[in-house]
Amino acid sequence: MCINVIGIDFSKDNSKCGIAFAEVSNNSCKIFAVGTQKEIPIKTISPLIKTKKCILAVDAPLGWPKIMGTVLENHVAGQYIEKQANSLFRRKTDDFVYEKTGKRSLDVGADKIARTAHGALNLINTLRQQTNLPIPLAWDHKNIDGTKVIEVYPAATLIQYGHKLNGYKKKDKDGCNIRKNLLKQFPKNIIIDRQVEQETITDNDNVFDAVLCIIAGFDFLQGNAYSPAESNATIDCVKKEGWIWFRNHKNQ
Image (cartoon, rainbow, N blue to C red; front, side):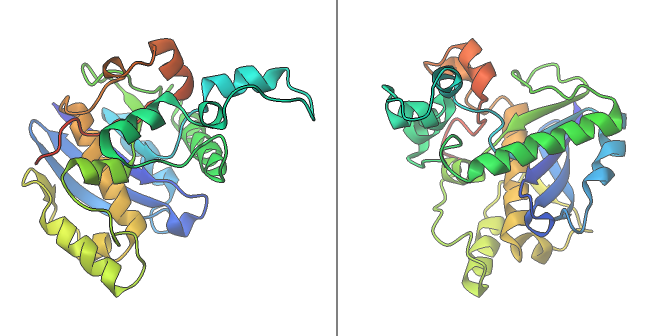
């Protein structure tokens, strides 16, 4: 098995959109390029995904709560909404992540993260137009053909590898040192290519998250991520709302 994994910590601000590239072969994952979208334009991804099997691991919601669309379709201004806010604004996958990790992701139905989700979907569609490939979401780690997309959550990945989140997103020197320490603790089968300077990963928290997206993608390909079947959500609901793939046990 030789599959490229592209990790994207999405932001509508190109300077804050982290991107990382890796090649997965058997039981190892080699990271061979990292940067921000300002440094590595999205168009550079197109040739790569046209020529090889690829997983795009994106840190951004790729769907909205199913019940939200159902309720709001016939709602009129001023009318009472019977559904509780949590059930209206949170997806099944968000609740599942919280159940397993204790970390609550932002509510895509009730936060500015909705704009991030909209932008990420636009990015995926741009890649479809540039490559003439369908680029669907992946629902199974087996028999990956062409290019597929998965939604990931770097914080959940860190937690499942037994790490604390305290300070790792800080922009200052302390945050940089925390990321350096975390990088040293990456599993041995996560290999940083010699041409990639480690400072380019640890100096920028968005790029660091893009690398965590790759690790989540690697876990997915290895069959080491929670699947929708392990939750109480129906597959129809998950395909409507999306699913966050993250490591299914807390160890390295």
